[in-house]
Length: 143
Length: 102
Image (cartoon, rainbow over all chains, first blue to last red; front, side, top):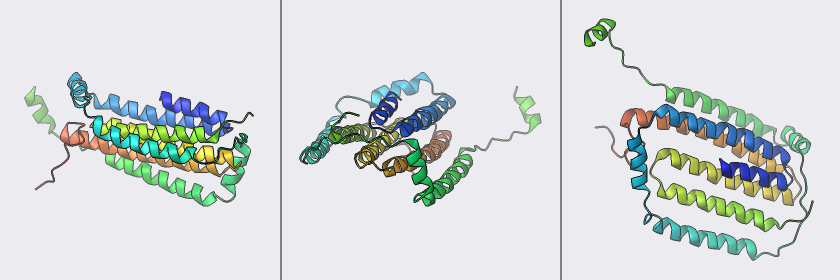
């Protein structure tokens, strides 16, 4: 969550205050909270924490570390090898984003609505758990 | 506003992306993998915003809004799937779901 807040500040520096606020509200405020709710709902005991500590050893970092350093080197090389022109930061305020959303990108907004609807229906259906139905007289016997 | 080199923003996006990728590759817990996917999506969105700020167009921010929407929908469906997996297999291991029934 700290990385999300930091990136939101970077957005504000880059002249995009609307997206900075949007990121804090949606990313750090809704998605991370959702993940925290699910973690609390799963009710993991301390053995799961121990298991995670076992899985995350230090010599597991060698393979992905080498590949990622190569990839990062390529990215940095590509970005630096261009002519770095110190451009001014142009502030694109919320009104321009709104006009652009209502103008050329209105199809994307509708498709996002459809995607969110599909996401809601899918999440509701996948999140249901069938409860085992025990006959109520049997419950009294098992006491 | 003062001039900040635009390449710094792109390099930051690249570093965040690589960090998210390393975190996905070395984790076995499903929830940590999901968080790392969010970090990667955030890094891609940062690259979009940097590009939008350079050309003074609103398109970068619009694209970031779409990425944000997609990330929210994907997190909700992914968490529902994680709940189902935990209900069936009683573990959050990513390698535990490697058998098919029958």
